Image (cartoon, rainbow, N blue to C red; front, top):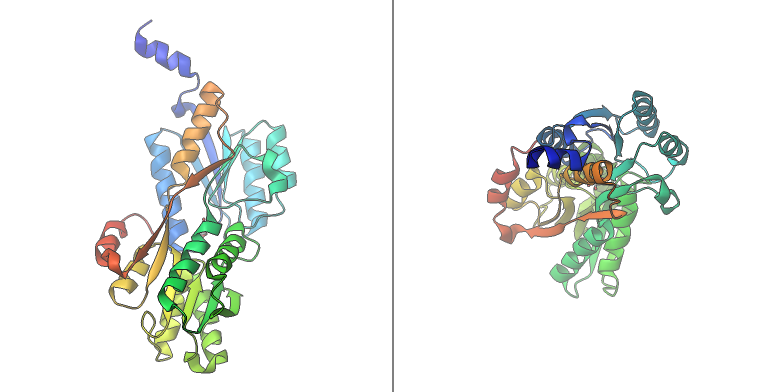
Length: 313
Ligand code: GZL
């Protein structure tokens, strides 16, 4: 047989034979919309049949989608778990059906570790720490009251980004989180909660900084600050996570200060792990970590905006 045929034979199942179901959270943020766009492109590159179910941020819809993928007999299931708990039963059903599950961009509680093949995520504690350390580097010894826009309650990334930020400002007793509430990772809710923070904090004049667990909530918060006659990016420092195009636009306008980048391409490494597992029995590490990078106004934000604006955010 030719070398080519031999190679195909050796790799067993070709990527083209695979059907993978993705239980996606929804499209609550620009980042998540980009993740969906990128994952479709990555599936196409590998000639994989890819089915995406949008759960509108509801866990029960994600569980239904997983059950449907099991009934369809897909080769693997991707899950971006909206919250970290409540997955044991349905993931046990996938295990019994011998369908490997890969987590994308969020984790489930450690008790479920044997219920998934691998998790492709960033280090969200580190992201929060980078954000906290950046703020500490900006304020020095000045008293700084911070308001925090948390992500979805119970999501691993919200818990972790909160902890990481606190680690980042630990040892700087002049920096205090004075208010903290969930904006559910959306622009609308981020704006609404920021409006309430501004009212509760004397019109916002004693707010020194805003920390948002994602850029979309920060974009909403920036709108709220401007409508209240405040100067985000100048009187009130901003730091958030995702590095979506619009936060770079705000930075270029001097209305935002810093963002920690999260790649939307979690699916590429996930596809490769499943292909290797299915064709060669290669067991991947439990965690495939994606990189995080801090960007500030010093990094030519308009140029970065231009490079990201057509990537499906
Ligand atoms: C992080 C991801 C988060 C993004 C938000 O890995 O789960 O979910 O930071 C999105 O934009 O809502």
